[in-house]
Amino acid sequence: AIPQRSPQEIIDLRRRHLNPSLSMSYQQPVKMVRGRGAYLYDQDGQAYLDMVNNVCHVGHCHPSVVAAGQAQMAELNTNTRYLHDNIVEYARRLSATFPEELSVVFLTNSGTEANDLALRLARTYSQAHDIIVVDHAYHGNSPTMIELSPYKFDGKGGQGRPAHIQVAEIPDDYRGRFRRGEADVGPRYAQDLHRAIAAIHARGEKPAAFFCESILGCGGQVVLPDHYLKEAYATARAAGAVCVADEVQVGFGRAGTHFWAFETQAVVPDIVTMGKPICNGHPMGAVVTRPEIAQAFMNGMEYFNTFAGNPVSCAMGLAVLDVIEQEQLQNNALQVGNAILHGLVELQKEFDMIGDVRGMGLFIGVEMVKDRHSLEPATEAANAVIEYLKAHHILLSTDGPYDNVLKLKPPIVFSMDNAEEFLRCLRDALRSIA
Ligand code: PMP
Image 1 (cartoon, rainbow, N blue to C red):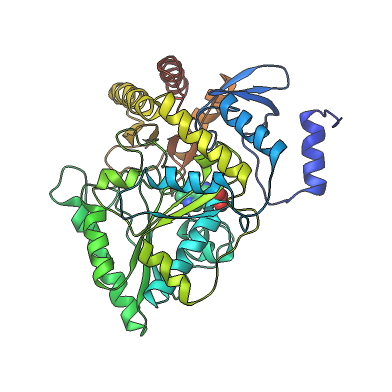
Image 2: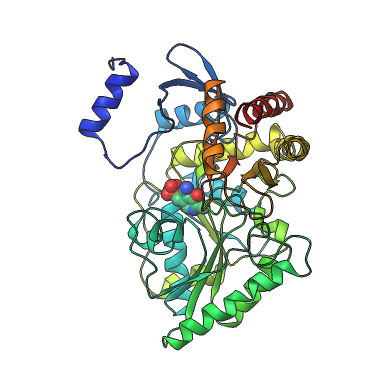
């Protein structure tokens, strides 16, 4: 049996034998031993309401997903050069959730691998090299994806923007140049792609792709203003670029009104990448694209990935799709998300510290400020809220360029009771620090 150690012993062993750069959550990290639904349990059996985990999408250790993995693991697990039912059934079911033209599926093992593959597809198809990304975006941990991630290359240990990357202004209608309520906010932000494309042309290059999350995560839970993607995609395509929607954080029904968050912008991307929730915690990622883009690989290098698309991953992915449907979790995300948004708007009337409330379904941001006019970020207050909630057994994180945005992205089985508990505790937290 694996020895059961105290939190301090685990911290000491991590320091000695594990990646020393990996940070831990909270001043006093928690040892979790079990998960169920929207809850995690520590070594003393204490329950914590999980509002951080957008990976265990249909609930921690969902019995149907676990059973699907266990059964397939006991039967066969091998690579995709043999014929197998699971992978074709998964590709069929996944592509059915997309607009018709997005019909070809590539499987990977993570969101990073999905974005790396999307980049390779885009470059092969467009025969171009340079890339446009949105400010503060994160697209993955590989050297290539760090180059595409302002969140990393402009952050601690980063080496700045590489010459072949152009950064489009973040369409943040709370803090940015154009504000919510003004006319044509989305299209006006999208204008910045013209500047990015001109900069690429000035280097003697062409744009291969425009990468954009369908709701901005690391940028601070920023909902794209209406018509942003429509305008940005038109501009990018006119310059020969392929449009990539990164749905790693926001896909699979989380947005509530739609299964894919890009659908809320009334666009059809050329490539969609996904990961995190796809297998409820088992590692898998995917790329879905148009046949003509997939065909571009036929004249060049084969794509093969040892573990990707194996029968176990596909069985678990299928179980996730079934559970979302059977338990009507997309609708749950919509209803519970709306109730939380409503409760937060009420709290905003009571607490000046809440500068902005925004989101879709169960992907919500609460931006904390010291002053509603200067919008000075209340980073310490946001972190004090996180620690208060943790002491009251609710897990929540912060994000955004100033780390002052409370980031709500719980498993989408989050219930109305969970929402009420959270709102009650958040009010207490805000009172305690006001
Ligand atoms: N894209 C986005 C938007 C992400 O949030 C992440 C992970 N945080 C990734 C890509 C990379 O996914 P992974 O960690 O599975 O490689």
